[in-house]
Image (tube, rainbow, N blue to C red; front, side, top):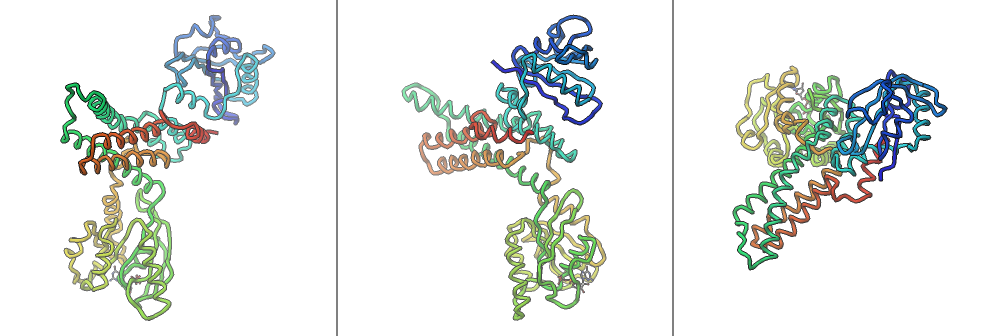
Length: 452
Ligand code: GDP
C-alpha cells in the first residue's frame, strides 16, 4: 500500500502559479476533502488529466484559493499510483496552508525525489530516465536540456533494448542446448553467434565513445600545442587566446614554462597549453621546459602539432610525428603565407587531420575548428541518441562491453559454449544495473540523493 504523499512542486518563492503534487493509494478521495470541485461533484469523478475549477480550503475549512486541479489514475500516472495536482496561485503562505490541510487529510510530506522514485519503483521509468529527470531540472543550457529530455523519453533504453533482446535470445538458446542435450535443438551456429557477439561489442563501444565525445563537449578538451622551436606555437596560442599569452620572438627556445588558457572555438572549449619547443638542448633551463612539454604531451587528450611550412621537415619534426601519429592529433602547417618548402604529403601519410594556417596573419582558425570537430566527431553528436549521462551509466556499459570482449575471446579461442554463456550472463547483469532492474538499494539511494 503506497502512503499518501504531498509536496509543493514549485519551490517556495512567490510565483504566479504554485502546484501541490499528490500521490498514493486513496490520494484522490483524500484530496477531495481539501479541494472541492465547482461542479459540486467528487474530485474522483473527473476524467483523467482534465483540469477543473474548484476551491482549496485550509485546515479550518476556510477557502484559501480558487484554482484548478486534475487527477491521473493508476497505473498510467507519472508515479504509477493515483495522483492529483492542485494548481493554485503561487503564494507561499497559501500553499503552506493547503499542504497543512492535506496533512490533516492523511498525507505526509514527500521526500526529495520521492515522486520520481515511486515512478521508478513502479516500473514507469528506468534508472537512466530517473537520472535524466534531475539532469533536466539541473540543465543550464538548451543543449543540456535537449540531451536530458531525450533521455527522459527513453533514448538510452532504445539503444540498450536491442542489445538486451539479442542476448536473451542467445542465452535462451544456450540454456536449451545445455540443459536438454538429448533434445533435437538447433545449435546456435558459430557464425551466427560470432556475428551477434561482434555486433553487440560494436554497439556498446559506440555508446561508450558517444559518452567520451559528449564529455569532451561538456567539459572541454585538454589540448597541448607542440612542435620544435620557432614554428609559431606561441603565435598560435596568442591568436587562439585573443591576447598575448606567450612571448613571440625569432629566438628559438623562448617558451619554457607552460602557458595555459581556456578558449572557445565555436562549440568546442579547449584547455590549451603552449609548451617549450621539443628539441635536445644543453641549456639546463630550456631542458626543464622541454621535459615539462613532454609530460604535458603525454597527459593531454588532443595534440596540436605545429610545423613550419617555409622549412623542410627536420629530424625533430619526423620524431614528433612518429611519437604522436596514433593519438587524436591535428597537424598545423603554419606560416603558409611564406613560400612552401615542407613536404605536406609526408605528414599526411601519418597524420590524417591537417590544416594550413598563418598564425601571424590570423588565417585558418575556422579551418582548425572544423578539423578538430571532424577528428573528434563532435559534429555527429545527436542529443537524442542515448548518450550516456554520467559515470554510473558509463561504468555499467563499460563492464558489459568488457565482458562481451571476453566472450569474443572465448569464442575465438574455441572455448565451450558454457564459457561464452558465463560472459554474456555477466554482461546482462551490468545492463540490468544500468537500467536499475538489478541495481542495489545503495545505488538507487545514491541516484535519488541528487534530488533536493
Ligand atoms: P614558437 O617558438 O614555436 O613558439 O614560435 P613563435 O610563435 O615564437 O614564432 C617564431 C617566429 O615565427 C616569430 O618571429 C613569429 O613572428 C614568426 N611566425 C609565427 N607564425 C608565423 C606565420 O604564420 N607566418 C610568418 N611569416 N611568421 C610567423
